[in-house]
Amino acid sequence: MHFHHILKNYSLSNVETRPIIFIFIGDERIIEKLEKRNALLLKKLEGDNITDKKYDELKNAVENNYIRKYWIASRG
Image (cartoon, rainbow, N blue to C red; front, side):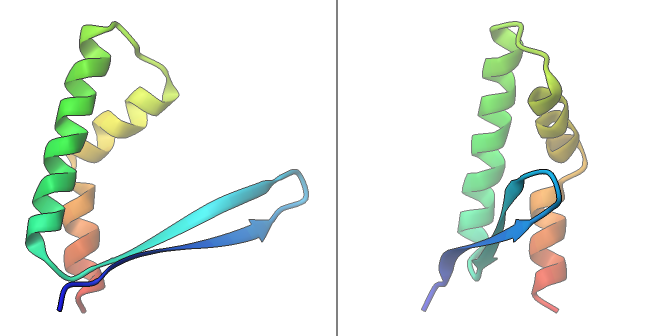
């Protein structure tokens, strides 16, 4: 059985409410799809000349393989 659950945990800070999303993934195919999706999104943003904070965060995540590293670390 493959697990792909998204749980939202909202924590309060003294300024605002920020959603924290935890993803539990048990299948490498899902990781590969997420990596491809992020790479395509990054190319789309670059093609549209969108270079804001979200772009920088996505670029950093893609370049450093954060999805795969998180997945490996979460497997224990």
